[in-house]
Length: 144
Image (cartoon, rainbow, N blue to C red):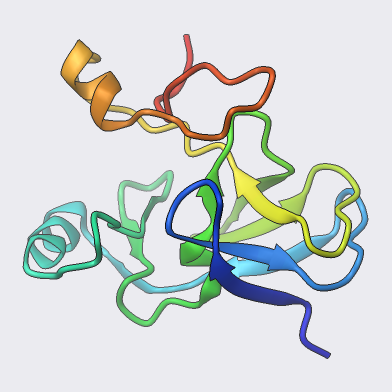
């Protein structure tokens, strides 16, 4: 039984939507793609045209999962400051889990918590958030 659908998102581009109810704590999907180095992933991203998407998910060991190469629908998860899902890393793999109950038709979100070397006005603009939640911090960059 299909649990998710990828379709146009009111937040940005494509998004991932629940087709059935999901419980808090439920493991929904694994973030898949080619596990590689940041350098190789960045080189590959510069040669692709993904409408501004990179699909890169950093791992704690310094490697990255490139969802644009061999990835699945999780690469279409959008950012929200008040996300209803979280990423959980286990031995070099990343799983998406619900942080609260999710109803059919709801878009699934994670907090990207992006990091850039220096958070300038230009960086904040480049990583502007469109979630419009009551707790929106205005950026996809890690807070604090």
